[in-house]
Length: 434
Image (cartoon, rainbow, N blue to C red; front, side, top):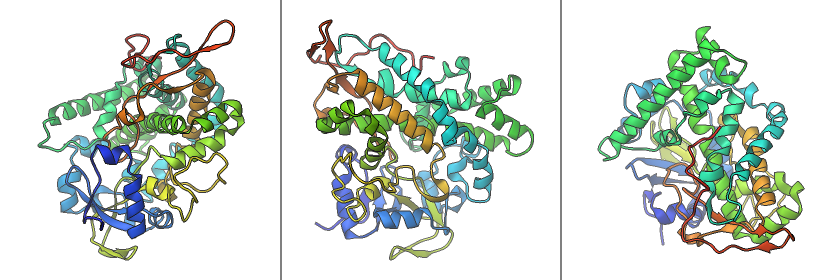
């Protein structure tokens, strides 16, 4: 069947498994018009080679000012004054401003620095596993681990003090999801947005009054010395808090789902933990939490991969589709722990390559290694097709991840518990616990 124009990119079936659709799109050509649930139409690039060229194309800018009226009417929906005050972070900047702002954060996420913190991250992961029920009954790994570990790591890396970390609300991360002006959930969305903005103001005031050597303190100093505007400072903190942890949460879930679908790979990792760095790269390639990139725009009408794209239309790259391009990765739908390492695009490419990639890799190695080693017989506690995939436009992950694991008795014999009807956590957890 021919593909519709535009191709709809929404719905439970699409979010559960977008890869058959992406395969059809790749076969039909490298770029297609697509439709998002908000009503926004965009141009989606799917092939690996085309994706690399697009992500490095100097004609494409990230600044929202380049978007045309049609895009702005449906996609630029964060209300004022928050849009002007929170949306001028790195993802929406072009050179040279992007270069200057990025330089302020790169040292905090440098590979050598975050590698030195690995033992501390391991302590955090072990402590969270220690809190899990000893009976191995159905546990929501999102609530008990995947949503807590990345935030604890982030707070450590950026210098968010414990008294502020304890007050962060995970639901503030939902403010990046499109909620249009006529959506019945708009009042709740705007309330979350105001709450997050007030929290950011508190973080800035606290770091100014009690400066330290962490990234947040350095950013406040950069603002006070004129390197950043107040809006740029707030936006960078917004980006760190929202984009610095939720994608890792989601990537932990996609990786664990993939491993439960390939139990032979899971058991091999249990037996050969030294394979974990290679396994993380393959799991990132197979099902990335960054499914789609954010918007890019042409300043004037131009040809892109054989199609005429109007100025100000949004151009998006499907990182997931590119990472399963058979021209770059033979047998792309398989989880192959022995696959030769290659340039997957899970962290993007070019100027906007994720500055936290080294940190995310270490987080995933520690998280998956800890869960596999300490939860014998790790498996889903519900049928695979009952998992609820998050409805996020740009990301992939599961809203919850009910699992069970075997309990080892004093003789060392695994005892497989019965799976309960509903996943549980050990107690009424407040998120995050620091």
